[in-house]
Each structure stands twice: as structure tokens, then as C-alpha cells.
Image 1: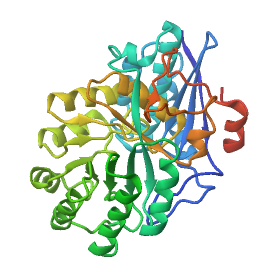
Image 2 (image 1 turned 135 degrees about the vertical axis):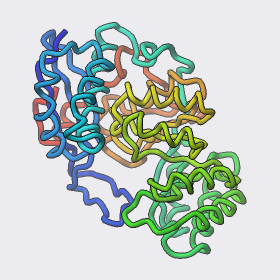
Image 3 (image 1 turned 90 degrees about the horizontal axis):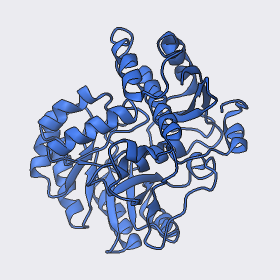
Image 4 (image 1 turned 180 degrees about the vertical axis):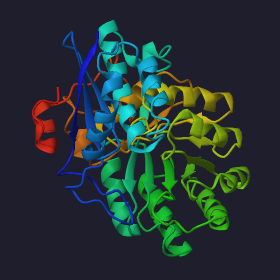
Length: 376
């Protein structure tokens, strides 16, 4: 089975706020779908955390390397693409685009083999996983109302992030966390994401340590991105002294970038994003590397239904990956997948056992949000 063409479609019109200092608008494109077409008619689906102009440019650069390649060998083909990009771009749009290609190739392999991707990764440790509702912070009363609404949908784990946290005062930070805990209750998991990868993040180690001590009082499960994403020594020191688990890694790409962080014991929980890091092939190698270093792997998932589908398959294939991120309120997750996503009575998501990613996209919804009529 040979790759004949790779198409892409940028999603626009309902892009959710990102919490960034330079805030996203609904018409901005930060997520692009990928479709790998083959000479046997099968199509694989992928997703890229990059706008479509950059993805199209990257596909043009990569085309001589992927056209005619064996579509059933995702790890080898993706490594070929990485190896030939040393001089044109390690990381960034090139690596993000390879991520989408790799996800689509795993989807194709699963469809051709008649097996879910998780089984092809070595076996399924679970057939369902707990999604945590991921939403932006707001002033306390508004956040509390939002969380109560999301909780009513059946979620039992929640992550609040970005917004005003760490940007005004310690008293406001605590008021936000207090309101969140009151909304979700003592029996729900609550995580806090400072958003330290925002532009010009100024809070350092002492702020992060003092904030971590405050978060302990509210039984926060982990503290995510509390520091600048390049501050590896401060991360290692914080992880050693923080009373709550420290999580991060969503901005890193390629397994080689994660190795020094894992060796430095800079994270308790590592969070590669499958739509950035190099795809499923890279993410599973990072996950096993983390496992060998005693670090938990919980995928970052602020992206699309295709990214969520990939995360579900990855979660099935690792023994201690018992959570996946679920971006609430995004049509790019809730509306573009046929059948959508349903929580069971325990607040869990079933991991598809059908071939490939176990996902089928709604053609009309993709056209509505991308304007592309021939993606797949």
C-alpha cells in the first residue's frame, strides 16, 4: 500500500480561546487535519497543532520523501522524514506536520490490519479511561459557574488553566482555586495549569514553590507548566521540593528533546502532545522512556477529535496512563466526529476497539469548519 497524496484542512470559525496573552479569535487557525491517501483507496486521519499555511508549506517540503512510501510502516516512514529534516527544521512546523502524517499512518495500519492502534502498539491495558475536562480559568464566580455546568455533563476530573492565574496576585490565585474546589467537590480530581509557556512568562522558582504549597491545601492533583518551558534546572528543583506533582512538556518536540528532562527528573508527569511531538511513533518512545525513569505519561490534548482519538489509543497501551485531556466546548472535538463522545456512568470514555484510531469524521462538519470539500 503506497502513499499517493497527503491533503490538509485548517479548522476555522469556532477556534476556542487559548488563554494566551495574544488571544485567539474564532477565525484563527491553529489546528489542521491531515488525510493520507493511498493507492488502495484507504485513507488515514491525522491532526497537527499548527495553522494550515505552515502545514501546506511543510507538506510541500516533505512530499518527495513521502510520496510512494509504504503506508503500512509508520515508524520507519516518520523516522525517514525526521532524519531528512535536520537542516531544514527540527521541531516547529516541520515536526508538527510529521506528527499528523504519523498519526494518519498508524490509523492506516490499524485499518489494514483490522486492529485498534493500541493493540498494534503492543497491547491494551484498558478499554476505557477517565477524561479530565480542560477549561480556562476566569474570575472565581464565573469559573465556579462554568465548572458546575461541566460537572453536570458527567466529568469527575478537571483541569483549570491560564487566564488570570499567576498574572495578578497570590490572593486572586487562591480565590480561583478555592472556587474551583468548591465547584467540583472533594471527590473529584482537580489540576491547575499556570500556562508558563505563554509569551513573556515572568514567574520564577520561588513563585512556583509558594504556589505549589498553596495548591496542596486544596488537594490539587498536579501543577502544570509553572515555569518557563526552558527552565530545566528550576523544574528539577521544583519537582524535588513541591508538595504536589509537577507536570509539563507540551511544548517539547521529538524524543531527543525529552531525554534531558527525564534524566534530570524535572517532571513527575510528562505531557507530550501527539499533534506536535512527532506523532504516535515518537510519543510512545517518550512514554516508555518516562516509564523507565519513574515518570508518569499523561498526554497533552488541547487539539481536535483526531488528537483525542490518538490519545485514547495511546492511553490503552500504557499501564499507568489513566487520564486523557478533554478540551470542553470545542466543536473541533465535539462536532467533527461522527457519533461524538459519550461519558459512561462512571465519568469514563470508552477506548474504541474498531480498526485504526476508531474514529470517523463527519464530512459536513469538516467542510463547515475548513471549507475543504475533498479532505478524505
